[in-house]
Image (cartoon, rainbow, N blue to C red):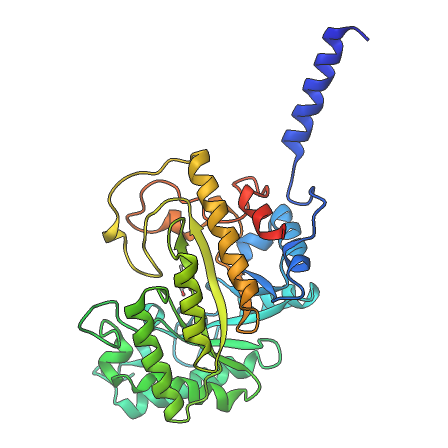
Length: 366
Ligand code: GLA
């Protein structure tokens, strides 16, 4: 063959391998296989994700536990009193069952998803009494937890009840707090345990790698434990960045949570490819307005951060019992869609084309 043709052949082969490199092409163990001696590895999903064939195969290859991204939240299941919309969640459960995946239930009570009917008198719209609100909460939790009994092995019972403000403990910008004070938290756990005594019950929160937020969360959990409230785990959301947490902070956080005698689940992991910080529902007010375009340097930092995070999780496998990513691949991330977001975040292990990134290899090669 002439030299020119050989070059052409090499060029075509390179092009083909590049354009066709997909999620299932690498010969390494999947995430779930790599971590089978450690913990299940999960992903938060909506029907729009697993209905797409390439995403479906990526999910089935890598994950053995799933979380409903939105379809188990109160505004989805319980838009009206007495009416329950389980359709999307039931499909997700069926998908999990077909593929041998476990399901984390998320979330029974969250101030950002608090339908107004809980708090108003059905007749005249005046504020409902606390007794009526608790009766409704009990019915709601019994119906939802009862519906998924045996299919959902753990629940984020209360999501994000702690305040980010220096001078505030339980967040007060919440209809639950406004109407019931902090007591709604223990009620929710009690009702969930009544409905399914076998389900593991979690308190789920963001920014636990910051000492103030962590201390308040620990105070809440100790308080619940002292009252005999059934709580089995704490969900560490884990919306992190390339600089924070450091290894030291992460170790300190896991140890502090583990010392409560609780299981820790990493429930919503993503590591944005920038030093921007905005945990959970925090807005972007802390941003320095800099736009971080993708660069190899940032990608290398992200890979190093993911490597450190998974090394730490492996080290603490007796405490960290599940790790779930919040969304599947970069262009799907909630971070790019949120109000006030600047630029892209590229926070996951798979790129826009669902190809494994450098950070993926750091996570599976150990
Ligand atoms: C929080 C919630 C999740 C989800 C993310 C953003 O962390 O717990 O359910 O809404 O925000 O998508």
